[in-house]
Length: 243
Image 1 (cartoon, helix red, strand yellow):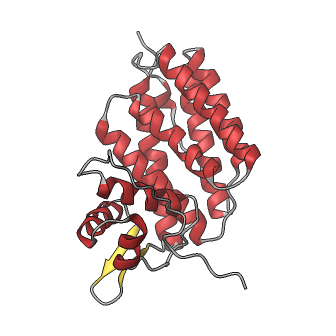
Image 2 (spheres, helix red, strand yellow):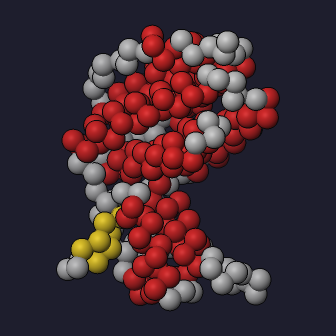
């Protein structure tokens, strides 16, 4: 009989004699985060410290440090009575997350209008979308993670660690929201919309790029919430052409 997977099964580990002493929390954090975003660990799933520690071959102290980072991102919650578990966003929280994400990512586009989109950034974005397409063709959950990371890479191109962090956290929570409400990931739509955005950036047409991002994020919200969403008005953000 097939057993149900353990909450920690999707996070593979390999012993290494060359592992640095401080990379334990990073391994646990990265492994659990990928599993949560990729919907391998579902919202509400328990994350027993002992089981996670055994899976990764680390101490409970290391696991608690990794949990702290996941809690700060809103992916994990912890109570004194029930321990740690994957967060379960409500519909109202999902709507708030999507509104915040649209607002912040349009700020990202405004920041990118001052000439920060270099050829190196464009090459990186094209390579990333190619990886999205490959993952989509292969099936599985990798395309979910890559689709969100496209937006993180755009935020990183602004040179603002704060913007990049906020976008990363909101993208992660969006992935969690899709999983909680059993919503499909529209990977093909995401790839096409990302390609259209890169085309605008390649032409240095920031007005079109900003409008394309607004359209893309509105489409993401509509796919996620399964209802029409009022489009953002972006004329003031669109006027960000380099002098």
